Length: 256
Image 1 (spheres, rainbow, N blue to C red):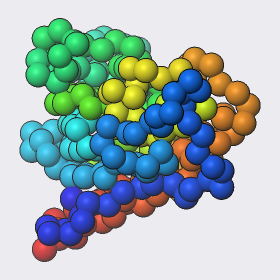
Image 2: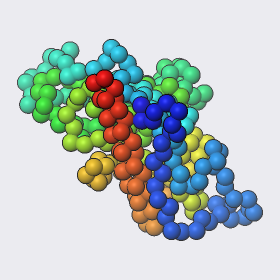
Image 3: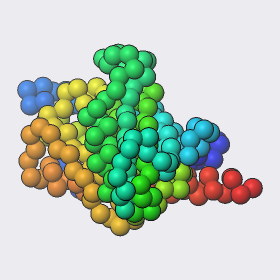
């Protein structure tokens, strides 16, 4: 786990951007208050644990507020489907939701869009040449959907791959930002995602400080995009430190 028993759960909030917070509702005297009481640039505490599934080659559990996910990695193993010889390996990703994860999704929902985006996020960081003609399967399960599901899934999957000993150029971290009115809210929860004007998700390799993927939807101004990038880069870097600490503690525990 990323934190020792009894210790405070670490967070990865970015440094505050030097800018005053503007009211969201122009015609209202009321300002926005986040449902969980966090500041606009404050991330939820991150609880991470490896080895959550004993039958898998590697696995990880992540809990970011009310968002709870578990990722299992199997392989490298011989592909079940006949395939011609290839110098690089094959990556399969599947994202699904439990029956109780969300009231808005059907029972045992498979999220094909998230499966594709998870694959895109991971394939660039895995050194595929290290397992030719074999397959690595990544199964991600959302136990509880509390917001920023995809970014939590990507970070957790990276941790599970490292736990499985899959060679990677670096860990990969992901952070989301919602734009509501003129304000940016990092690591949004479900209620905030439901009323956002735009969404922004960044994945990066924190040790290299390299952005690997950007997903932007809705209406964004150039200053807001620049601010969101800085917020996400800083948060991704700090989340990477938490993930590395988790792996170090897991290794230390296995050696004892």
